[in-house]
Length: 532
Image (tube, rainbow, N blue to C red):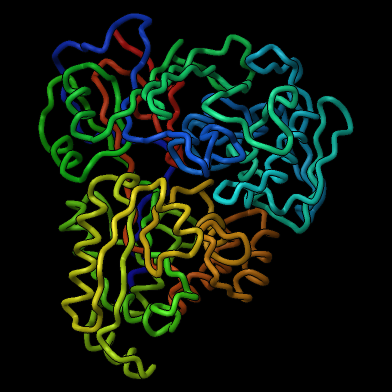
């Protein structure tokens, strides 16, 4: 079956209301009180990550939500859409036709929250610092193509790239390129704790318990200079251990808005029932869930094993039974709504088939059942993850071709273990760093990839990605990513499972909730206000 025509609308960062339940009182406060956001994200100091809000470390959507609100980058994603706009910069442009030199001019009079002036030297320091620290599970890969940073004046920054890269403006719009104070941050090491000194729209204070953040207060930065128009003076984030407690707090009016992370059952309930004083907002999203393979692990090193798994997995079942139709089946590493998407896995493997999977193993002289351990994180991607992995285990084992066990691990252990190659097969989620097909291919392939995977493909790394990065008009780069998707479907270093949607539930007096998330699923708290 060819699924190339099954495409979602292009994500523009605008959430469309699907349910409005008006009435009741808004118990979260009135007037100029803080807008309160509930989340199940966890931020804690660990040996591996002693400074969770340091831009050289932070590389997950929860932490980036904090950094986008407290730091500036030269560019940032707009209210909606995918083309970056000027933030700390007044303008940026490529200085050559090959996309190898990128020049930015800073706004004049920029200040950090401690009163220190922000100059081009701070920009250079921030980039050089992130590359020098080179944190293993951090976002430094987004900066690896920078050869050098030049500062001709206090307001001018010039990036010299190792090779052409039309996606570079989007990369420096991420917190990987957040501008830190060169007088406050150490050049070669991380600070400890949850301190933030930035020039973004808000300053930050945190309340901690047992090395973990339990509350974060964002206060309007009076010295902020940038394109954002704040609709509030203060935002508070409260962190919950489970989504049920968070949902109760929303309904009671203790908090104003929730986004991360809602279970499928909660989404279905909020979507289909009238909840007094609460409205529910839904839109297409770009979050994807994948099975990742350590291609050097003996259990899955033979390509035929990975192909047989790809032939067996029933994504429709995962979407229907485990996510209650709150996710969509995904048949490529590039999701629907992104330039160049095509359903390469369904085109290659068609419908799930035990007979075809058995034939794949037999042709490679692999005896069944193949023993496997499926590893997943118990506390990072929401409560539905465990249920989905039980379904995957059942699908594989019921075929008679695999003997799969499950292993659930806390995120604080799971992420470093996965990077160290300790799992043969494991589940990962991916929120895009920026909304471009490059960011769904390059992070998983080649040297310094996000997964720390040993898989390599010279065609993708040395030809298709470099060729695509010479194309400024990204629609014209689609042909390169379509070839890459077909190669991934053939070799199966990763297996796409489902594509998430974006959901927000908010008290009915909260304005701007439809703008709460941008095209990379990042929270935009400055859009939130309190109506009368």
